[in-house]
Image (cartoon, rainbow, N blue to C red; front, top):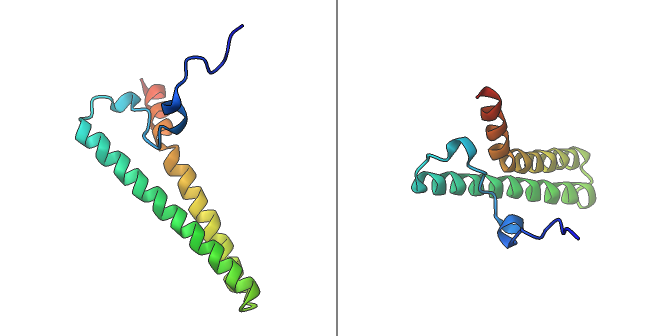
Length: 102
């Protein structure tokens, strides 16, 4: 019997947002840490925008009865979550583009 997750460990599950370094394997350790920190800060900023949008939508829709504020909140939620997805997949996108060019 072959188990699909037999060789995996916890780092493959919770490895964070660090990209698979593929074409950027020659970067120094300090540069890798800086890239990881910038990506983490950008993801936190996008999540904060999404949370702010959710609060704006909730307050605008219920307390203020302001439909414009509620629609603006929806836009902020979508923008924040899209930013998280894009930043989270940058390492994969760069590796694919580099692999197609080589």
